[in-house]
Length: 621
Image 1: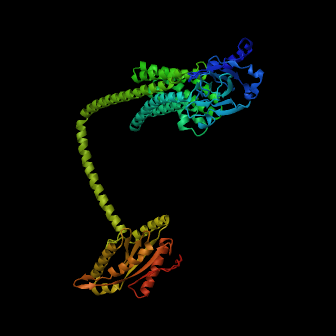
Image 2: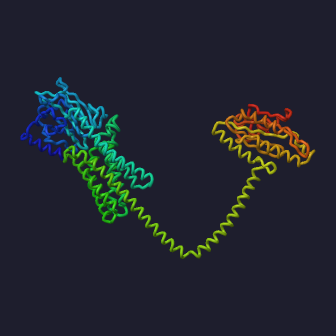
Image 3: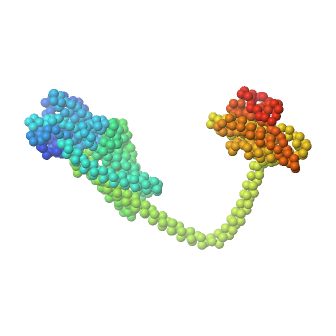
C-alpha cells in the first residue's frame, strides 16, 4: 500500500521539493531525531547499487520522508538519504542510531573521503558485534567527522519483507551511554517482574501438574523472548555470535507466543465445553501460527508476516468473545483474562500498525508492549490463582455432596453390611489359613526339590541351575568361574565298620564344615553318596581356587567324634574353570571329573586342576 502511495507521489514529483533540508546539528542535539530530514527511494527488483544511486536521474527520484520512520511491509529494498552538517560550536564526531532492532538487512554507505563509499552491513543477517560500531542493543554507527561548512551525505538501504522501519537519531556517545543505563534499569525491572511471575507459576505447575499453568509458563516464556528480541537485548546477550536463526526472528518468536496464548485461552476458559465456536476459531489460529513459522522457515518471510494480519480476524475476536461469554456465565477468572488480554490487545494492534507503517516508531510506543506483557502476566496469574480457588471450592462441594450420599447409603445398608462383614471375615480367615498351608507346602516342596535331605545342602539339580546362571554372568562380565568336585576317600569302610548312622553323622558334619568354608558368593552342593561340589565365582576365581582347595583338604580331613571314637577321611578334589577348560556345564563337569580321577590316581588326599587343553564334547566322564 505504501509503495503505491509513494509511486503516486513520484508522479507528482515536479510539485514537491527535490530534497529534504540538510539537518543542522547543534552542540546540544544529542538524541535528536533525523527522520524529518531524510529522503526515501524504493528500489523495485533490488537493482540499484550505491554507485548507480549517484546518477542525477536517480537522485531526483528521492522524496522527503516528512518525518516517517516506517514504510511497512514491502518486498523491495528502500534507500534512505541523510545529509548532516554541524554548527560551528558542535563537536565534529557523532554517532548514528538506527532504532529498528529486528530489521533483517540494513546497509549503511558512508563516504570514504576519496570519492568512494564504505559499505557496512547490519541487521539480523550478521552477528551482533559485526553489525555495529559500539555494543548497544540497537544498531549504532560511527559517522565520519561533520564539517560546519559542507554537509556530509550518506545512505542507508533497508530490506525486510516483514516490515521496514528506520527511526534515526544522532548521539554523542557519552550521552547515549548515560541514557542506556536508565533504559537497562527500566527494562531490567520489566524482565525481573515477568521472570518472577514465570518462575512462580512454573513451581505451581510442577506441584499441581495443571495444563493451564503449563501454557501460562510457555506463553510468558514466549512473551519474554519477544520482548528481549524487540529491545535488542536478546541479540546482544543471548544469541550474539552469528546471524539470527529463523526460529528466533520477528516471525517465529511471536508465533510461539501467540500459539501458546491461544492454548492458554482454550485451557483457562474451557472453550471446548462452554464456547465451542470460539474454540474452533482458536484452533484455526493455532494452524495459522504454525503456517507462519513454516513460511518463514522456507524463506517466505513476507507471507509469514501477513499471516499475523489474518490472525487479527481469528484469534483476537475468538479470545475476546470467549472471555466475555465466560464472564457472563459467572466465571470470574474470565474477567481478569479479559482485562489482561485487553491491555495486550492494544499493544499488539500498535505493533501491527507499526509493522505496516500506519503508526510511526516512537519512544512511547516502543515500551508499551513490554509494559502490557508485564500487566498481562500479573492479571493472568491472578486468573489462574482464582481458577484454582474455584476448583478447590467445587471439589469441596463435591466431596460434601458425596459424603451426604455416602451417609444415606450407609444407613440403608448397615444391617446387611454387618452380616457381610462377618462373612468376609470368616472367609478371609479360611483363605489366610489355606494360604499359610500352601506357603508352607511350597517351601517344603522347594526344599525337597533343590536340597539334599540328609545334609540340607543344595543338590545336583540346584547346582546345575546355579552353574548355568553363573556362566551367563561370567560371559557378560568377561570373568571366570570354577567347579570343584570333591570325593571322600575310603568312606565306604566307615559305613561297613561303624554302620550307616556313623556315615550319616560324618556326612552331616563334613557338609556343615563345607558350608562354613566356602565364601558367600560361592555354593557347596552334595551330588550324592560321598560326592560333593563347590561352585566358585568372582573376579579372581582361578587365583583363589588353590587357597580354597588347600583349606578344604585340611579342614575336611579333621576327625569327627562318634561314640568315643574319631571318624576320619581324606578328600580328593578335581578342579576345572570356565572358559579355560569348557564353555558349558557338561564340558565343565567332565573336565572337573577327569581332574578328580587323576587326583585319586595320584594317591588321594590332594587336589588336581585340569590341564590347559579343553575336554572334547564326546569324551566320557
